[in-house]
Length: 227
Ligand SMILES: O=C(O)CCC(=O)C(=O)O
Ligand SMILES: [Fe+2]
Figure 1 (cartoon, rainbow, N blue to C red):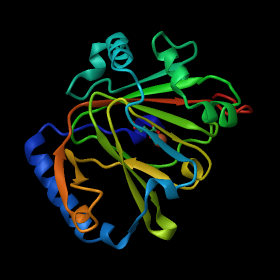
Figure 2 (cartoon, protein in one colour; figure 1 turned 30 degrees about the vertical axis):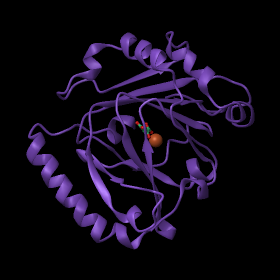
Figure 3 (tube, rainbow, N blue to C red; figure 1 turned 90 degrees about the vertical axis):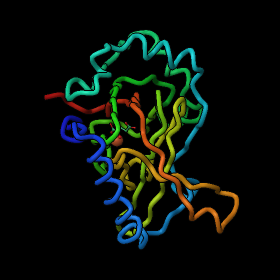
Figure 4 (cartoon, helix red, strand yellow; figure 1 turned 180 degrees about the horizontal axis):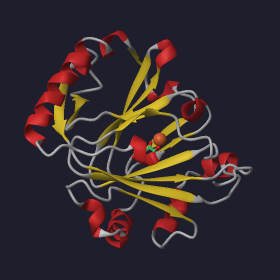
């Protein structure tokens, strides 16, 4: 399933980016503008933690992963791991927020993790995580910032969450089961210039993406049978 969700980037990057950027500008001015942007705080079960992982842990993790994962051609962009995780990935359990760990995972550690690499132009289609995974999903971001979009199509609600390098985003309950999440397939993201000034907040600047990878930590539902 993850394979179907995770797509490759295009070789003709410049041209492709330009086309995507234009398409994206169109969508901002047309369809997306009719959706209501809501703040992250209004999505029940969604929490974002910037500057969450120490830089040395980020480096140690990047260093234990196979180099082939980070190629900018079409091969090996994701890696599925099940317990026991190699150190230092196992240490990511220690960076789960304490309430998440106690209330959602009942003090149990992650059982499955997926490492996914996004080159500029890559994304992941709007989806809810598979039901084989239990409630509570934690996503750590590495190398570069990217925008994840949460949508509730039935109410035309939308929330852009800037996932900064070294951050953690966790979703449970409505954020995990009712909202969709996606990473738009494009070479960069539109970033608000200022969130303080209401008038200025509608002004955006285009930030080209660099290679980014994520580690998603999940638990398997108790009655799940494999195969
Ligand atoms: O890479 C990410 O940040 C999101 C990954 C994701 O949503 C998934 O694997 O289900
Ligand atoms: Fe997901």
